Amino acid sequence: MKNFIKKAKEKLHADLPFLSILFIFIVLSSYPVFKSGFFRTIDDITPVRIAYLTRELMHIDWVNQFPVRLSGELAHGFGYPLYLFYAPLTYYAGAVIMLILKVNSIIATKAVYVFPLIVGPVLCYWAARQILKPLPALVVACLYTLFPFRGYDSYIRGGVGKAWAMAFIPGAFGGIFLSQKNKHSTDRSNELGFLLFSLFLTLAIISHNISTILFIPLFFLYGIVFLLSKKQYWFYFFLTLGLSAFFWLPSAFYLNIVKVNYSNQNTGQLLNFIEPVSNLFRVTVPYRGDDRYSVLFILYYLVVFTALTIKKDALSIKQKRGFIFFAVVSTLGFVVLFKPAQGLWEFTLPITRLLQFPWRILIILSFTLPLSLGFVLQKISSRTIQIVLAFVLIITSLYHLSAFKPKEYSFFFEYKAEDTGPCATSWGDEYLPIWVKDCVSNPSTTIAYFDNQKNSISSSHGNSTNITVVTDSKQKATLFVNKYYFPGWKATVDNSPVSLAHPRTVHGIFSLIVPKGKHTTHIFFSKTPIMLLADLVSLFSLVYFLFRLKVISRRKINP
Image 1 (spheres, rainbow, N blue to C red):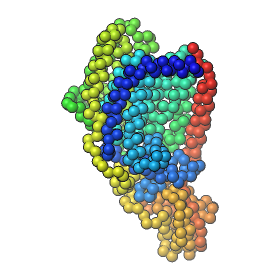
Image 2 (tube, rainbow, N blue to C red):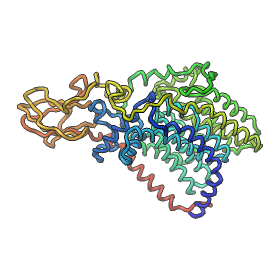
Image 3 (tube, one colour):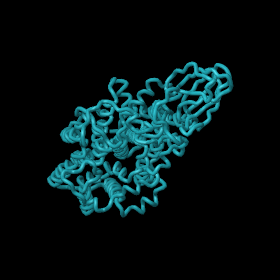
Image 4 (cartoon, rainbow, N blue to C red):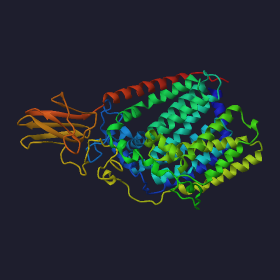
């Protein structure tokens, strides 16, 4: 262990000059978040989502309702299963910050925004260093740091989930590269690399589930090309699916009963955002912050393809294959953004429609394109030419700096859910169940009500997902509950389970039958069988993951 720590310190010392330069780029890209005030974005909802998750965590039943899947207070108190379907990790991070540091949702949101801007470049440099020398790795990290889509996503789009996913993808590849450096499967660094791969890919999946449509095929393809016979890789690949099952499994299972699956956003909208080829050559000075890609990409690709003519023995066979893989992925990924590839999108629309926008491919390109250029730089045998080219690539990336600032600041300090639309859910009603024909635009004055005025509710108490109602009815009656029905809502009358009926109104709320007389009705949200199964799969996967981590921490490192 002492030798390992000593080697790590020596390596860090050698990398410090390069990390110092990278630090400057990190500061340039993240500085606007540290300024006073805040900025509005297209997906301007993160503070609300963090605040309402915080409220759920403050009164949660940790056995039956964790992980949080439904906010009982969103949608004007009628309940909304947001956290079941969309990118929960970022909101959990913000909620934990609010609970521990006692700050408001704006401060927590700024922390969530700045995290990927700082951590992503560090992970990118670490990943590149597993296969490249310090100077090429620095170029990769700097190009990644100021990759224009990262700026657009953080400061214009406000897609914090995508930003986190982009930060973790280099970490997942870094784990693979670390494992590939070692020839023996019993080596500690080998399995540690696969553990890190599984960890970071899991974090990417639960950061932005839509991007999983890109992540999983990419790593599956990488495994086929480079690690087909490596059983350990495939084991940890599927362990990743187990670790993240608590999120993706129920989300996929219930996707067909929410409106998002049937909206234009997830059916044919993608085809409307394919770029005309003429936009590829559009040059603006300074660079436009709301652009997602840059004309500089063309020059970068010219560098990549020019490198193919460099002498064949400049890289090892493994490095050549790696260079070709990432160059081809980057090239194809860039080409499909434009009109000539529309036929491909139409052919794959039954699956790719869930991406919503073709430019989400830039999430992958943010790492693969800089990495392919890093391979190019490492090919150059002349140290002088290598340094000059590295300098040019790093300086030209500053052209994209204008993408890393908001259009304007505003000095308000709280959002309200009501600011997000008539349904008060997010920017629309996309995760409301399909039986909600007309969402309620105002909070209800009561938790529940009878269909007959002769019956009454003497008292009610509890929280948004755990309600107790004491009723007094002259006869058997129907009690309507002011909550949108979603699988997981249950009820008991005097501790005896009763069936729920839905929808009983155009608003999609549910109801139950209450017997004559005075009774205590308990209404609560809990796990369905598929949610429970998913949680158990993730729990067992996590236990195994921690067990393997403990095992390799005790294993000696091969010299």
